[in-house]
Image (spheres, rainbow over the protein chains, first blue to last red):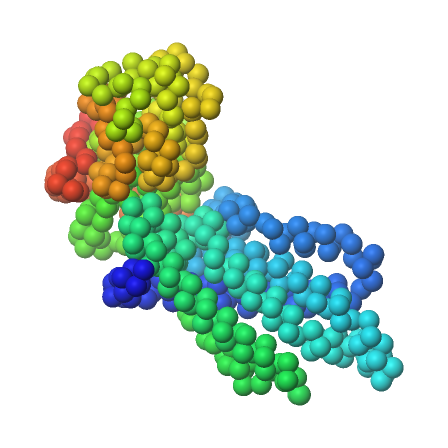
Amino acid sequence: MVQAFVLVVNRDPAMMQIIWLSLQVSGLAILLAALGGIPLGTWLGMRPAHRVRWPALIIYTFMGLPPVLVGLLVYLLISSQGPFGVLDLLFTPAAMVIAQTMLALPIVAGLTMTAVRGKDREIRDTAVSLGANGRQVALTVIREARVAIVGAVVAGLGRALAEVGAVMMVGGNIEGQTRVMTTAIVLETRRGNFEMAIGLGMVLLALAFLINALLYRLQGVTQD
Amino acid sequence: MKTGWGKTGYLVLAVLLVLALAAGCGGTGKEHRAGEIRLATTTSTYDSGLLDAIIPVFEERHGYRVSVISVGTGAALEIGKRGDCDVLLVHSREQELELVRQGYFVDRHDVMYNDFVLVGPPADPAGIAGGRDVVAAFRQIAEAGAVFISRGDDSGTHRAELAIWRQTGIEPHGAWYRSVGQGMGDTLRIAGEMQGYTLADRGTWVAMKDRLDLKIVLEGDPVLFNQYGVMAVNPEKHPRINHQGAAALIDFMISGEGQELIARFERGGERLFVPNAHPVRQGKW
């Protein structure tokens, strides 16, 4: 195991590039997913549950979207014959960000909605009684539910970092351009380089650990 | 604002913003497309390392950058039909010729061949070893009800396997016939684990054989001949592709130098591909 790790770290600058691209793509995807998912989840969470049953059900369903299906959908949209073909996005990191955002956004929105719903009632009553307007109430609710919302972002980031089906499909796993850690693991496995694949997997886990440690601290800070 | 997000919160936000900016500076590639050639190919040419032996030489000679997208033959052909790549290197000759006739691709040439081998468990429960006739061997496997692992992914190898089953007159199905829908490496691994027979391209087999509890039970039957072809996406159908680059890559692969590089490529002391491009005039379709 340790040998596998050393193998990866010692290999070459190409490995650093793969790791860096993974971080960029998934980091940007989770940023976009949070920017869209937190407001959406908050808005839905603050409505009466019976009024938003359908959107809620759809979001919960999309939380389980198979990555390869999202990959195929995005592929068809940005393929040169697709509606967005002129943008030349296929087989670029931008396409990978789009696909991972679509995977992470329902998770962030769904878990935020649940978190807000748990907090909403009494906080809203208090805030309203203090004369807060709609936007202020929403911000108060988000603040109160922030621990769970950070959890939602962590779950979404985990999804983005770990998935392989979507980035393989829309990125193409092109060396030096769209190869990320998960697609590199698939390639090395396919080539029979199991040690290298395991080594890459360990690097991926180590990174996930570091990122989560950071977010966990953030969660801890917010609890004070 | 007293949100309590604290220093760590701003740190996280700053890191995310840096990532976003860096990704933005990376660009989406539009500006690189002029010098870029997209080659859709099968996993067998890429995973074996063959392209690593050819492409850098071509890139240096012609100043293009080649982006390799390695998928199954079925997916590669579909990507090409949609105009999402410039040039293809695949192995499903009949289908390639049909798609050229339909106007999707132009400038198709035979490039090289390798061969398929029938591999199976060392115990050889269907008693195939020593034979030379792959159709008879498939019939024996079916009759013995021995486990057979099929790629099942519409790849060139899968199509070759199905063509052999058609020749046996047997419709392969039942508990013994397991279609796994995966690439060659994965299929070989599964065959090893399940101690089943499978049809493999020699390149992937040579690359993986040391880790597998399998052996070749039959090889050398001309039916197992596996022709690779190279062809360009039709620029009249898809004007935005890099046809000049595609043509340059095709010319290189069928040139004396390209053919020599293919002939010299070895893995594990075995030569994996035999170049057989016709002279340009004769091979053109």
